[in-house]
Length: 181
Length: 452
Image (cartoon, rainbow over all chains, first blue to last red; front, top):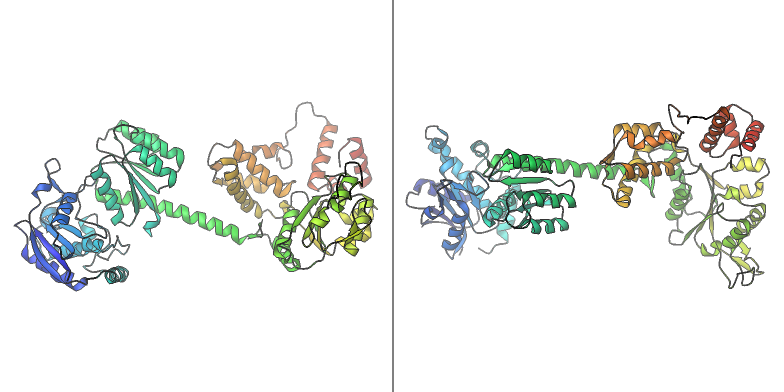
């Protein structure tokens, strides 16, 4: 049996958020979902950018991935970046095994607003679906309401649904059929 | 589908290169990477990428600007985005001056890079769509390589199709350069003789005796130099079609020989006594008015009626002006490969000038005009001034240019020459145009020694 793992990175992982992600992924993807705890990402800290290198995090996840993992989605509080961009909401190995989502820019507080737990959790589910979708080979979708549409700012994330359009859903099913779970 | 579009990311730093490539792949593009300017230039020889992301500072070998220049030498229209961590006004200006489409400073906002890429791809999509539509339009108006949207030309092409599989002789009449041979090929290719040869002979190009041996072949010893038996064009065309161009120019003797071939489908080789039988379809063409030549006793009436079983009269280009832009674009696309120049279009002013020209030399003259303009033009678009030579050639000059010292007689001579060119050598028509009678016209032709 192969599992879709959802990992909290570091000790301050948000238990409720991880639970919501596990539920949602279990409903959307054709694999049993399991939780797992993995170490924090301090090693990926860049003192100049004062952010965390998401490529290093992905490399760590590949090394730490359990043998029975079909896919592994990790969640971190840290703000992630790739060198050419000011930030990323998350990153995934396209048609690969691992993905990571950062919570930092999903919180209302980041933009100077009061905390809103529901808004935050809704955004998190969308990003979790988005990055996991990439590991199934899905690329950005032209349908702005689909979870796979490209979001380069928080407004884009708020505009999409926490679900896939029929086209992406169809592709997901085809991808999943080719995999021996 | 974005995967149609290929992007090349050029950066010596692996993490930089691979992270941008991964980000673009998530967006659905096919992405290649190069770790140096040399590798990028080498990859660009194998494929023209929709976008090139090039890092400005790369140690050893080519830096970003040099890499960009190499790429632009291979693909003049390449969309290149220069990336740098060290933004200065000078480097930005240099990059743009050398042809970079954009200049971004890393790290940049994801939104900025995403908008940049989608804007370039949108333009590329429109360019591609434009090319496809142009090709489709050309195909729509192209039958057997004959390009036209003129109703009369379409009637002619339909007639060609209808008579293609018959053996009946076809007489194609039209001014020089109207595409008489193309029509002959269209008929041949659309019929059941298409797999057999189409043999073309220009009757005007050869002296009588040469033409005779060319058409009918000769036996060994038929004349000095006839060392062995040789098959003529009629034998070569057996089972297929023979295209006799400029049939109006053949001698009375050859007219008789040809009449016999058309009547009996048989002939004798020069110096031979054995009858040769062939199954040949004859398509003849002429730029002179054969009816008039018959009336003047210059062409046998029995041969004319044998040839004129199916008559096709090709309109001159000035009577199908709507085809000028289509044909000009077709020649432009074909010649850009042959001439080796990347010229894409003709400006509105240029097209207007072409539409206004009278084209005495018809489609052939238009083809030559496009070629000449392409050779001398410096840009990607042929402008009005690139066709300035058309006005100098006299035929369509709205304001005629007269060289210093030209007298009235010179002018009269030039006017007669031009008018004869326009009427395809038809003296009667030219006389009518000039408002003089035919005998006066003959006198003037003789007086000015105008070649006919």
